[in-house]
Image (cartoon, rainbow, N blue to C red; front, side, top):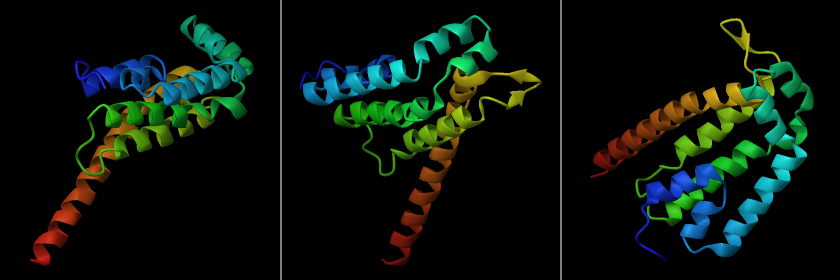
Length: 161
């Protein structure tokens, strides 16, 4: 493994494209699997076209083009690949450090499910913008739960001494 790359750098490359962080970690087969799954889900879900339409403000067109049966797989793949690249790269040493990634995947998936109807401040955000916004509460909830679990574990350890 090349130690010139930090865990954070590997995480950022995994955000750019699932599998890139694994390549930096020397996990070529795993990286190829993530890249393959990314391309499969992306193409079957029409995600690149949906992203383009969303950036152009054509949200209703993006919604109609989205294949939600495929796109629903994307958040779990995406956040697991990020977690895996970060963890294999030397990050995530603290117990329960996976929780912000897991809850981000949950919240983004829920955002995807509601992206056809849910409006924020009267604006329909669609299958790109609403799930992206859902990352924020996912990270917050994951970190809060991590802190609570760690505090409870610490209290339990103090009580058993």
